[in-house]
Length: 178
Image: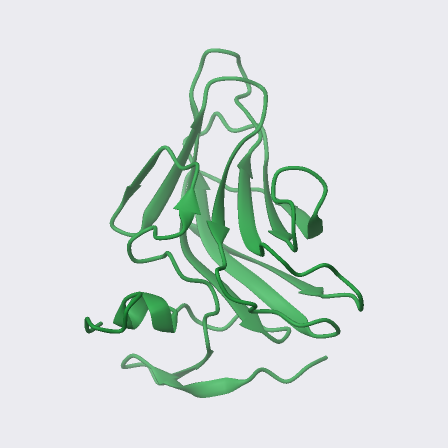
């Protein structure tokens, strides 16, 4: 078990939080493949039984070999979704370059999910990204919608409360405020 890297308190509750390494929660910057984005919520629609996905790119080297990380997020669906998965990719985000994956069972109300994993020694860590899969509708032609919000990638084995990344808080150039 690793100890989370604590950065301080968050909000009025005084919750302890880790740095969020994943940007894109505020404005969908560096995020691709979603059907819609509004008010911090990604929507992934699908009318087939094949996968449809979004990915959130990491433009910097955010993880290191031999360390443990936790992805956490909130998800829900519209009732027609067959299944959903989350992946962390080290290189080729569309095929086999994933370092970890996990199915998660969203319901029609918001739920928090988390997945902890260790980056193995020698893992290829270029083109890093998180990917969410809408694995299709239960019935062809009926739309299956997966909703994702508050995505967090943090060092350690504990999912701490959501906070924006530094990039989301100050903007890509650092010229704008939170």
